[in-house]
Image (cartoon, rainbow, N blue to C red; front, side, top):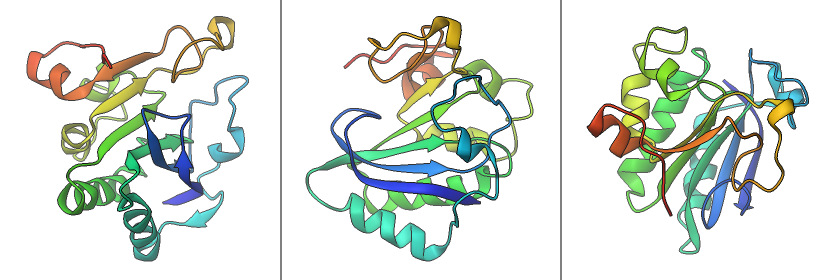
Amino acid sequence: MNYGEIKKCDIANGIGVRVSLFVSGCRHHCPDCFNSMTWDFGYGREFTSDTQDEIIGALSKSYIRGMTLIGGEPLEPENQPCVLELLRRVKTELSDKDIWCYSGFTFEELTGDSRAHTEYIDEILKLIDVLVDGRFERERKNISLRFRGSENQRIIDVKKSLKEGTVVLWQE
């Protein structure tokens, strides 16, 4: 897996000050995507154990609320093994930090029959606290929305949704 950037003090992609990992690779190719350079799976740098250590170090600061996965598409099948390894480590070493994930896949695609539903996705979803789902749709773009770019996208409480078997929207 490759990544385009690590933001160690991000306040735009979730509640509080966060560490955000911009994962490379995306097949959605949403028109007017804000980060189209990350569509290429080879963009940026290789994600290594040193990268994991850097993220864990940044997350360990007391003022950091959690981690956000964004892209590109963190949940492309090729990215899932590395994403899962990172999420396991965060939840083991820093269990007080929350995890947000932005994905062009809908919750229904991730939990149902789609190319994103691999042998890794069920565990990945159990480790994510909040999912911002759905592709960016330029005709539904709304710059006044909090933590999302278009009106079709939802902010989902993943733990409650998995427990209840239906989408439960996140509430602050």
